[in-house]
Length: 251
Length: 251
DNA sequence: ATTTTTGTTTGATCTAGATCAAGGCGCGAA
DNA sequence: TTCGCGCCTTGATCTAGATCAAACAAAAAT
Image 1 (cartoon, rainbow over the protein chains, first blue to last red):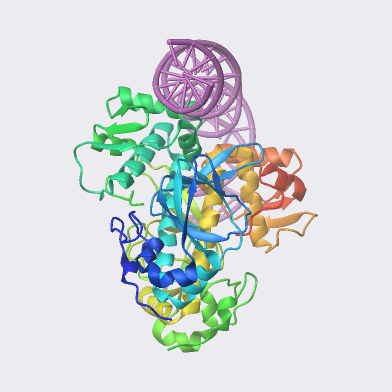
Image 2: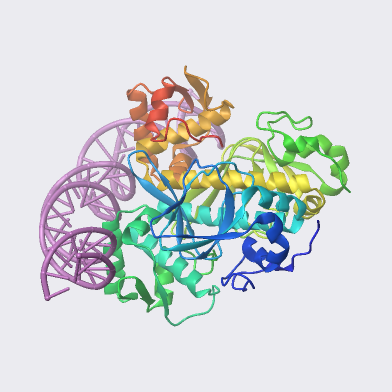
């Protein structure tokens, strides 16, 4: 078997024919689902907000990608301290080919639809499809870079910088914006609770609340309905992240 | 070209015939160096402590692996705040096939010998050698897991837990120990300055100094010559990390 | 052998963010 | 329409770790 899969080169923002989502990676194969179905046994699952999709230590039966909703990748210490180590938005890949057991919890933050493939058949496909493996490697390298950016945030940024960075990342991602447009404002839904944000940023929920309201008071953002953010002053928000003006934020 | 490279399955601790180091990944190809030399143009470089090996933004001319010494992967903010995002010990891979530019600084912490391959030929080899790509993917997945473990440390651990975790990681790695032996003590060289440790842990050097001396006073470790650590009570140190007794620390 | 330089310890003080403690504000259920 | 329950806000207080400031130790450099 050696099928040419042009969709492998799918970039963020391209649409996949089958799934109504922005695919950047693996689920791009859905386009070939008639072909792949046979051996990958694709299926969809829905999860309610708060559901644990995968627990650390679980035997990983499937890999897949997020179709709708937001899930989080997190770690919990025995005494309850929790750290989110990844945010899974639509098009993000879930699971690890070649890994028998999960290292982290995957929890649905909002209602989530997942597009699943059984792991074993997927791994077989991976073996026979060099482009897929290549794409996989590229994807994981991106994740690694993102994780390392996040380490800077966790280790060295102030609470305000952390919040600004989070807003930038989610806003940009949701608006599928390149690093250089939008000098005007942007508007997006922040589908995380204050607690989830705190777990992501290594803060307490009280500090998150205070900092968000401080940014509001300072006229950098506006809030409507608590979860809808309007960035009034984009350049200012970027400043507040503490990052170099040019770089990064392409997650 | 389709050479079988059994060394690809080299595990941590196995010796490579050519380089006098423990290879777990790519440099395992040195075993095949006669064959590969032609197109990969392997070479060695030495760096003094403090030398910048690669700067963020540099055009990456090579990939390679650390043969001797310790290097660090780090990020610096405009105002000088620095966060280490990875520690490169002997056998660790440096660089990113498929990436034109470096995302992070690589700095020699101690004198370092690097085994280098030009990136382009290496990438070509990667294309023609599926096992190599597979190995590469596995390696990057490990790094990603390690980065995420570190995110928990940075976001949620106390200063004391951070120090204990660092000592565990370096000690275990240097002694090539599996997670289950050594109920007695262990001894190792801690080749990082207090400042480097601080940059790694998201602390100040004063706090690092105080916490190390606190662990000494509490009888968990002993110090000889400032950079040589003797872990007196291994179980105790493990406790102090805050981690589950069983898990992880296989970097 | 003596001066620099570079790294480490230790103390005193300060502060960002944590912790503790009420209230408030939707919103779905009854 | 009111009750209850998840979120969110806001205030008061506390504290781990940062910051500031010396002095000390060990290794280079002269």
